[in-house]
Image 1 (cartoon, helix red, strand yellow):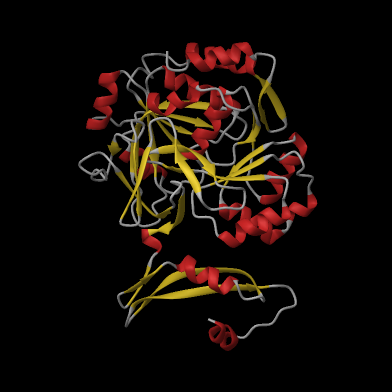
Image 2: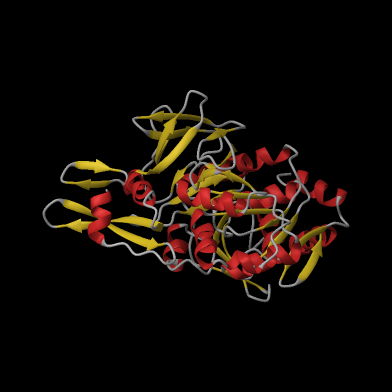
Length: 414
């Protein structure tokens, strides 16, 4: 029912490569067979409609087949990866009743847990007989928040045919961006290249080896590629598009990327665990201005902060109050400017603003100014506590090769 559209796509493209993982290739007919294998293997008395299932995995053939089955069985899915340090806490918050662990060799272990789910958001999903998805925030400002989605709304947009690409699942299995990458690729009968690890050299090697066309990633990873200069060691001519999101992109970094990779189109994406991934269109490959929306999304900027309204927004948090306004808008916490052409520029997060004795400023503005000095190659500013004024800025500067710059000269320049 929920994934009939995807199964039809798989059948129409049964002989095409679907997944490349650990140097092995799996075709769409394999994915169909594995889906039905797990349908018989997973007994209804263990996992039935409404069961809360934690699936500990990264992208692999079995993790993809099982995810499809769990959606079809109307379960509530809680994906977790090895990078999660608060595993037990997450399992308790989500009231997980069954555990599925997928190991390094794609082996599967299913076990029953002692929890009983009783959350009101889960009751809504069970009443609708819809599958759910629980995603945890990074918790960078405190305790991680668990957002609950109705998966049927997240999947609706994938029934519109788009471009077919060979794509790396760089963003993780428990990330809304990873979920979006997977279902975009499957819905268009593309080829998924699933990495074993995500170092700069390993990702670039996979791009060269498998002629990857689309790399969805983050500004931080792109910065690592620039700093390490690993890109010089690989043939990246197959890459058509690099999409970046999850955090603001420094204008200086985007400029360098366009200079080094003039044939690649850079597209900014926008999404949050709470609202999903919006369709986006960058003003140009070297511009930070972007139009976002699509499907049922509405956007507005109120007091400098982006707000979003959508049917596919989460139902709410398991462990925090509702963040929605009375009329249903989600306050993203992202600072944004809006142009006459309804383009947005995401300039930072409200939590990143530095408050020094009541004077509030965005560190990215200062970073851009420091970067304009001809000796500076890279710069990053982070807030630190100050006993007198509350906060102060700590600045890290990397100079261009062969350049010398004293603190006194830089302060004079500023």
